[in-house]
Image (cartoon, rainbow, N blue to C red):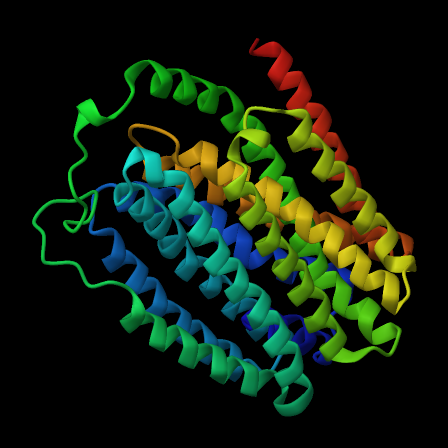
Length: 369
């Protein structure tokens, strides 16, 4: 819901394409800088305590955004979102891996991905509807209340003395693992991990481009914030469907690089066609984009957490590269749009970046053979 309110508030305050790109870069840029430290801290401190600290930070971020009455003040407040989220995601992701026996990791990751993806899709859908009814400040107030509730919804483990995994995690008997099979699987995960990291970083850079540059297109076509919310809601509901399929058919996609490349190509094609799509094609584009994002994210998280140690660090890298993509692509796209006067330029920049990332993944794969 926060990311539904902020772009439209920026448009109301008179942001041009480059300023929208700068605004888009501030939160993920802050996130990318801090999330690596957040991942390392989650290997040392109680993970869910860090997640709760993030909830407090999000309440403060919503209040600061609601008080921003000019574009510079809005830009000062937006980094608080990224700073708060940098503590949440690696801590929660690594906690899931800690609490899962090896045979259950894929299923639990699938459930986690389904839950946050449904929540994100619902947030955009609800945010777009509320934005048309109560405006950005009202949406931010609702988002602040949700973050406050989440503070109490997170599990409350017993008090612990050291850092790393939460105390409620049962110890896993090393003899319960299949040494040869697990060793081979982890070796493959190490090989595919950087490919998925690159894919996910650029894919979510494209997603950030949609977040901040699509509102101008929506307003230009007279569709309004509700269409924006429906579009992004459909993107993330489709991503949820992709997560469900990937979880149930693990062996059909993991360790197959072409099945990682193809969704990225479709994602790039969908974004490139977006500025020229009517309302009906807009929804079809959302479905294609959601499938591509689902494959990239699930692959990156799976390969990051399929490791015997340093899961918090891996989750931090996974999230940091998402933040870097979310920072760079909307910023470069906004600069290109202002320099050329072409409203479709941000989507073209993001599409080209995804295609270049596919080429980079193949080069890296061949170099590591």
